[in-house]
Length: 99
Image 1: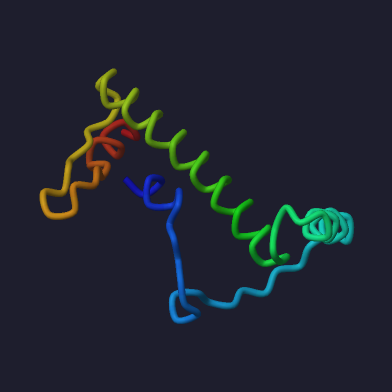
Image 2 (image 1 turned 120 degrees about the vertical axis):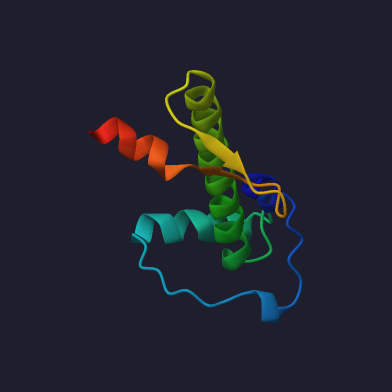
């Protein structure tokens, strides 16, 4: 499951990270600065990484829950990849509902 890989992903080394330029409202930057000044995060980057990690984990958990529910209700068909052990939506089951 993707979200389980996000929690405590333990990324070390710059070779695993990429630089992304993001424009944020100044109020966000000020809030992040306060958190880092108070010692809650060692840097702005780490504060943003943690916020993004929490957001993605939450969203992906919700998506997986909805997929499980939809699968149980027979609304979609989910197939499990035997190599990666990940679930994938059988898109034919969704397209069938479009007709």
